[in-house]
Amino acid sequence: MPRFERVAFNPDFIDYQSGYELQQRVHAEVVAGTREDTVLLLEHKSVYTAGKRTDASELPDDGSEFVETNRGGKITWHGPGQLIGYPIMHLPKPIDVVAYVRYLEQTIIDVIAEFGIEGTRVAGRTGVWVQSPSGIDKVASIGIRVAEKVTMHGFALNCSNDLEPFEHIVACGLADAKATTLSVLASREITPLDAASLIEQKMGEIPNARG
Image (cartoon, rainbow, N blue to C red; front, side, top):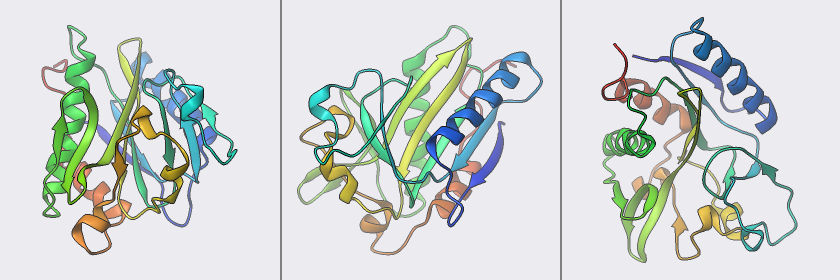
């Protein structure tokens, strides 16, 4: 099992740069073998982050600043009410990044099922999705990086956050996709700490991980 660390939760949100620097330190220790595989759980201060494949047309339409990152994927928003998970873990051999993304998706699907919410995958799109009256909405996004066979970045699960920031970007490059939250879906407040407790229960070793 990986080690779980609760880094920053309401009201002590962490800014994105500080969170990234923490990731880098932990990643270096995991690569060096001085720290066990670790999952950082936290809430960020409000920020837009742009992955390596972000197009200029997808950036905030209100002129908001954004942070360029070295993760995969496109632009998204992070902020209070959203659970961020940064698994910093050795990938099993042979390296299979797609299988790792599917592992993260399945973990989140298992977690939200505990709240009575049925999550699903959508062919050709990463993340976790749910059926809604308007079609299918996104409740969790995933963007990762692998360096020296150890993962960085991870997932963002919308729990009780404001959805308004998503209206100013083409989130994850998907113009036809709407965001939703666990609280909206369950018709009750579900906080990032509620979800974090279940992540700690459901997220085990990556399948076929090193012994």
